[in-house]
Amino acid sequence: MKREGIKKHLALYFIAGSQDCPKNIEEILIEAIEGGITLFQFREKGKGSLHTSDEIEQLAVRLLQICRTSNIPFIVNDDVELALKIGADGIHVGQDDAKAGDIITRINGMILGVSVHSAEEAKRALADGADYIGVGPVFPTSSKEDAKEARGTAVIEEIKQAGIDIPMVGIGGITAENAKSVVMAGADGVSVISSISRSEHPAAAARALKKVING
Ligand code: TZP
Ligand code: MG
Image (cartoon, rainbow, N blue to C red; front, side, top):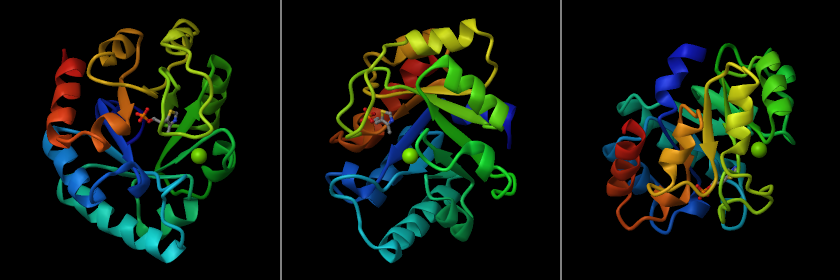
């Protein structure tokens, strides 16, 4: 499932690690799937995250199994070794992580996602062989400690206007209230952490987002 196939999976891309979840992450993922998420990224990172690689791997495997039973592709953030070891569907890297151009040769056709903050970075991600890009932060976020400045939907529009043809999601502070503007700007979908993971009702939160995106 590359480039074109990935687009429909970008509609509602849920990202989470245990640090993002006020209750059990497995329960939250199951509810999010029930609510209609189309892709999941395991991102165990930052304050409150698990420490040992064994614990992280065990959790990753449990979440991967949940995704497999519902045919939701499972992406691992940053950790190429972990993604390969557990047989994930893809890997997502930021600008400060292993370079997309370097890892593409090691990932045997897994989906490759790259975070970008400008049209320039989007162009490079496309040239490096990324299957999709995450563009943001669109709105201010509390889920990433070292997040760059939020730039609204401007970067998404710039990427579209520059004719950089790559599937993309907006990320950062996206809620059911502002998701429409992200899709209107040209994104194929939205990526969220807290508006699902910190909702009292993750399934309902996902459903509300999905409704806005599907318009
Ligand atoms: N990258 C840019 S913003 C962000 C990441 C991982 C966090 C998004 O989390 P939230 O809670 O949806 O704002
Ligand atoms: Mg990263």
